[in-house]
Image 1 (cartoon, helix red, strand yellow):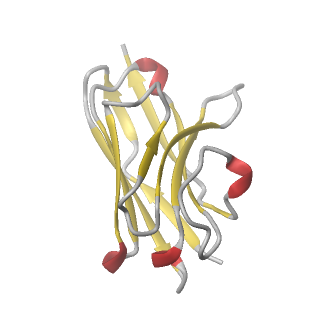
Image 2 (cartoon, one colour; image 1 turned 180 degrees about the vertical axis):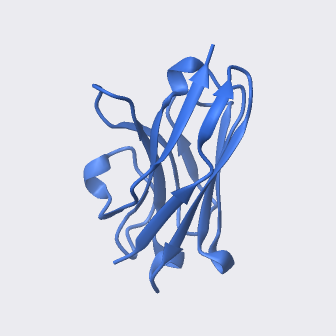
Length: 126
């Protein structure tokens, strides 16, 4: 099991940038594909981005493609989400998630992830 703690959220204006971090503990992190999801009040959890355990394969939701970048540093047990050109519709609680050890690539299915953080709030004003 991997324990996850997100940070880096905040209140920004449209067009600004934020960099989210997800610190992981647990031996299996380096071999776990990772993902970022977000959830706005009253809405379902939404996939944002995913990355393979090696970091050589990434996958994005169409709504963030070209604006967000997911990356990881296995030596520091950390996954990042660089968010540029933020829009009000990007507002939500951003959650980091880990797939089980050895699962292969990231995926947009929340059910495929076995460990979740509590999230960090991102609010984008217009």
